[in-house]
Amino acid sequence: MFEYKNNELYAEGVRVKNIVDNVGSPVYVYSKGHFKAQFEKFNKAFSREHVIAFAIKSNSNLAVIKTFASLGAGADIVSKGELFRAIKAGVDTSKIVFSGVAKRDDEIEYALENDIMMINVESEDELYNVNRVAEKLNKKARIAFRVNPDVDPKTHPYISTGLKKNKFGVPYEEAYDLYLKAKELKNIDVYGIQFHIGSQLLDTTPIYDASVRVADLMRRLTDKGVEFRVVDVGGGVGIVYDEKTDKEPDVNLYARQIEEAFRDFDVKLVLEPGRFLVGNGGILVSKVIYHKTNGQKNFLIIDAGMNDLLRPSLYKAYHKIAPMKKTGSKAIKCDIVGPICETGDFFARDYEIEDVPNGNFIVVFSAGAYGFTMASNYNSRPRPAEVLVSGDSYRVVRERESLEDLIKGEIL
Image (cartoon, rainbow, N blue to C red; front, top):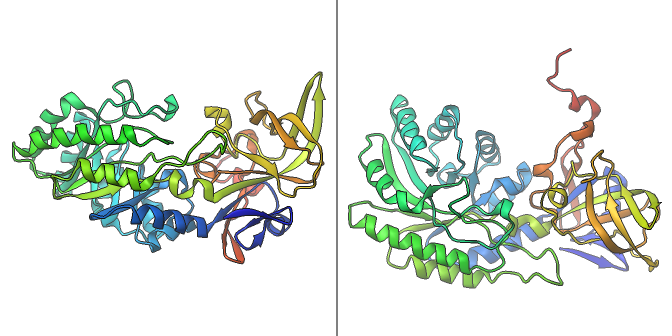
């Protein structure tokens, strides 16, 4: 939903320059139309009963969550704060699943009090703790074990979650006994099974391989009287960041693979897409402050930093970067860097881009997922505004932070 018209970038029907002129920079701009289109594409791929639980970690803005809730989505949460956001945005709590390796008692209580679909348990210790908290509240906790199927997702090691060496989930070899133990606990309702092998997967084969392994485990447990009502296959479906090398995953194939793997079970599927729904529906717009040359190295210095978009610094992730307005200027090869006092504060290294004069703007594409949600106030820099575009109109859905916001809650 971002395209150039007469060499100027538009977000749906809105000229991005109009947004920057009124809101300032840096600024995140989101396309509501893109979010809806991606949701419908994902939703229509599945033929059997399912819930799309939007991964709030990918973009936790209330207006974004509300957009998906209005389409019937649930939520995948990993903290009490994310559950609070989901409820505030109108998500049906019966469609919320709670993952994460370190759930505190107060978080478990909050989830049980709000009657979410299920808690995805990630260790034996957690199982007994959930049972204890549920007993204290005189409730029965619906749970699934997050099973680690030990399947290589072939993605960046920082976002790989399905191998034995990763901290997530219970080992595949131990899951069988844990389910039988859980079945005997008074305040536990064994409701489903969950797995999630990693993020930014462009090839869905590893997800199918993991599904087959999990289905085999389910068959053995079913023979022991365990009744599964839900299979949560996690998220991980990727997006195209680099048009030269990436190919968009076939979500129809993905859906067929999952439905085939679990064809023998009368269960509801839960899917946890995040990046796929929002990644290419967001951009970060930033002003060029200075040009600089150190020896043979050229730098384009902008007013956004790693505190605003961490992915390039953290993962060495690629993002397409282009001028907000194309002028036909000569291309330069440069490092595109921000104002943060870290050598790792960069958006691209040796990147070829049409030269953008000081005071003009560049656009970092594919910034709708893990952008603002990973932002910080490092170097005491206020976080940027967020804007949601719908058709020919837009609105600020998070105000730019002020200097006073930086010290809120601090005591001299």
